[in-house]
Image (tube, rainbow, N blue to C red; front, side, top):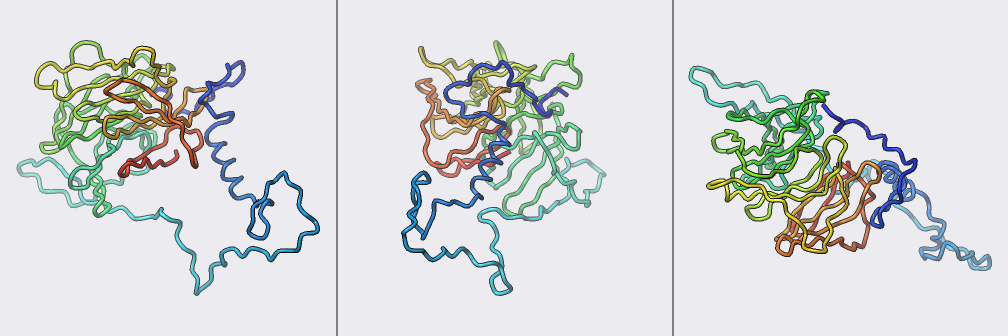
Length: 347
């Protein structure tokens, strides 16, 4: 496999100045550790429950203030509270869901655990029955193309057998769910350095559990990994990623309505005079109404924590000015959409 899951050792020597929207002088992991260190460090600017400027000298003649009482230590009558809102649950492992075969009895042994796993795909949305579908990824140095159904109602993970034009094993791909169809595109599929990345678009009918490789016409996005995808109506969007050391910032769309006639990819160019976000990989992308949002990622030299919005109707990219506690620069993270709020999980 190529370098998707290798640690990048990008040298800063001789690097040009970072773009104006980059707030980074260290790797994301170091920035995150620095943020945590600052959060845990006592703040000498707090006295008597009142904040004052750190650069303002303290008033030696001021009357002494009683120390601020922090939370009491855990005791038998005051057990420690779990950290909200995270919790740890044990995953149930029902028997694998196999395709029916005459004369073959059903399997009763539990499914293998899907975790730990890296570089797999999970659609942004669950099915109507509350199922998330985990496909492929890296498991103990082995690249997979297996499919798991994760039921949110009872926290169970079931290995699902499929048929048809099953996608080859891959890592760093992305997927989306539309009605009863799972879409998978991209990923690092090279077994040898001379191999070509798989550029196929794969659709899984969740009812029949049969894969189909779409035969598209005309130009198509180059095979890649570390990209992101999103659905807007019937259109499947792909942005960015990397391939063979090249970082990308192109935006492509595939309209599922063309499956009945002439399946086509479309390169979505920005409106005249408008520029897309800098090239990147390992970012996240979500869609709300007719707007696509992306956050973070890396170009191999810098990590980003910028937020961009793309209006699919006007074809205009806009970098958003955000306030509040902005996440530190990062790559390889995840995000989810809750109502109109994007919630992120660090790498």
